[in-house]
Length: 145
Image 1 (cartoon, rainbow, N blue to C red):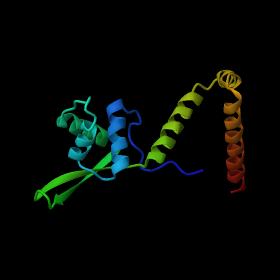
Image 2: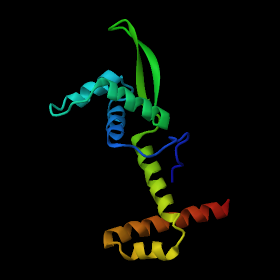
Image 3: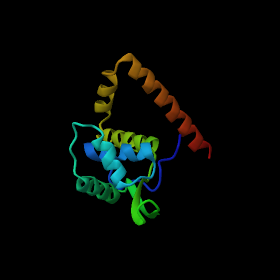
Image 4: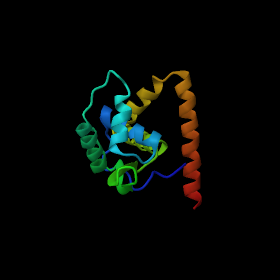
């Protein structure tokens, strides 16, 4: 099992526009706010101010999801910030799943967890079996050394 990425974002919760902009960054790689804004506006039914994109990028930066680097643009002979994700899409999925599981298990009531497990369908039970097997492997590895 892969270790959780470090450093991790300081705040895991994201709003819809934050998720959309982060998804664009994952898709494009390091990119400018202008390029993000233009991609969003490719949908003719969308209206979004450039300033809103900048605000969301700053929020994502404060939460620890993105970073920025200043690069000189040869096109416009100016400096622009290039925004990039601090974790990959897969790492983000892993972090969010870990947080949900941690929150669920923090209930600390085995009866609640058992009631949840009883309510799962067969496909989910297969997934639980795979998880349980993996947890047994991890426990054995830790006990060995």
